[in-house]
Image (cartoon, rainbow, N blue to C red; front, side, top):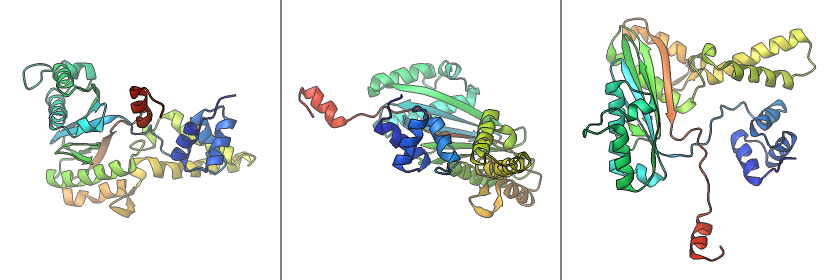
Length: 308
């Protein structure tokens, strides 16, 4: 039988909002598998359907650069938050984002090999910063969005400087209409994405395994119902799920009376042409990376050769 630690129970509680004892029971019933435990809690109505991502644990910054119909976002990680406040590190993130935007390289290895403003490569610049600042750094990922006609807009949440912060979003709007109106709409939608963290643009963009998992949870919660009733329950449940996790189906945070799709459609009068929201990218600093927690007092005591 798997050992159920207090840390595991705490992690499950933070992810689901369920009670401590319910979390412990869920983990025990699923041999410590936290994802299975989440589903177990949901089938019993003890946890909300959650859009789960790894804890934001890594330090560093994300940065964006946009110009008209194209934009890029990069993430550069560091060991501590102190480095993120360092102007040299902020400048490095900004420059790396500009290199990605100029070259179009978003493959990490290709981007590291691209020419850096000072004449070396991006990889060399990062290595130099490591030597200068004295802390390990990693270029973790990069991505880009582009439209044939229209605007790629951006928003940075928790910005420490222009274009760099803790959460960065790109939104692509395809249209031949007014660029300034598109940019304003795109920024609003990017702010919405930063706040809601949608799983996909619409239901067709969701991972099939994710949808199947949602169906399984709905079926388990309603076990014993006649097949024809179960079919309707799952259909209705998926519609509600899509409204929670699909960007176009979500209630627009700037006007809860309409969906994002409706807000885009209504913008066409101001823009002067049809508008299509073709994609988005959201980078949350360190998402999916587990940060190793430590007892600082214990570490100091250990270094001093005494018991904490």
